[in-house]
Image (cartoon, rainbow, N blue to C red):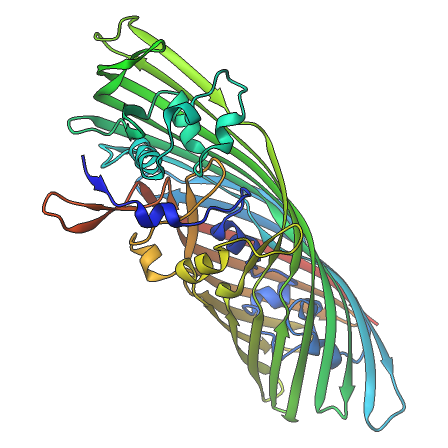
Length: 535
């Protein structure tokens, strides 16, 4: 077998909770959501304003208003996720994306001409995704990964052993809790003092399958104030209150043929040739509430040009995780004394409270009004993912988490483009585009770094790039308006059943065992409708 280099791996800190870096990153993300006009122009509103969605983006856009506004946005999402080499899994969701109210007060002042206030509800992110697949002739096995970590950690078999299905003691004796389930289900084998072997031995053939189901959302409630100074400078500030609920189910299983297995449950000393199947199930739910602050301005030096700037503080979340796992296994073959036998063990249900601080967000935009009928706008947003903080319930930063953010993550750059053309007094057409760059370092994408997870789940996932292509139409009649939008979102991401791990080959050279992973392509199509009234 390959000789695994574990000295560095075992020095890496493991968080005490079920939380880890890529989950914290996911909770920090936002989607292109809001009013239909906002979405149909790719969200490029940093320099435009005058829309209910600006309360979530650049509150300086609140100052553009000269009348009150109330509106609601409905959406129908068609979600499809397709791993490499398998068919797509689809689902349909009906959502209320945005509800808002703007109040406007005209002032008899040469300086501050309008004072405005606003309240809005927005769905800023959804986690709905489901995908599943399989892989023939697996190049390695999760059991090898578990065995290598147990060996490198130097944990004894006595400290991994569960006296019964409900024995919680062993889970406190190892840094990698899924090894407890692996050992007691017989898929990692004791081959010496504090030394273990997996099922992926030379000559074994394997088949792997996986299933991931995610659902939930992040909602934000905004309260903002803004104003208009001499029709040149529009300013705004606001506070956002966020609520998040995320649920996760992950199954990973393997069938290994012509491998080495324990002879029977009562004879741990005898290893024989045989076959094995096993499956690991992880369930978790994360919920949290937080707050943030936003500040923004829009400058109109001439009537045909607007320049906007805004920044968002981190969202300061108080979080709660509940998670558990179970594993079952079956062994069979002519060399097994009993012919076949099964094992099943479950983890305790765990609960952990902690805090997350999402990244700072900075954005700027420029917009041009062309001939009184056309608008072209462009935005840039910078998100420093490396500034994410994970703290315990008392606010102390989790040991090692800051290093993990720098090792795994990099800043995200978001480009937004939008255009609108007014056909006549009633009708307008719109189009937009948005691109979000990769959020992870090249070593993560290239499988050249050990990824620390925690709890009972060795799997992880991350987004590589996200694109939106949008269009829409608007109709205005007196004070009433109706906007329609179509949003096409594509996302490229990866699912890893377990981390890559470094080893020395037969020639003494360092290399990386890439593990088992697959690319996932998401295609989301959204139809959106906004009803509004200005008065």
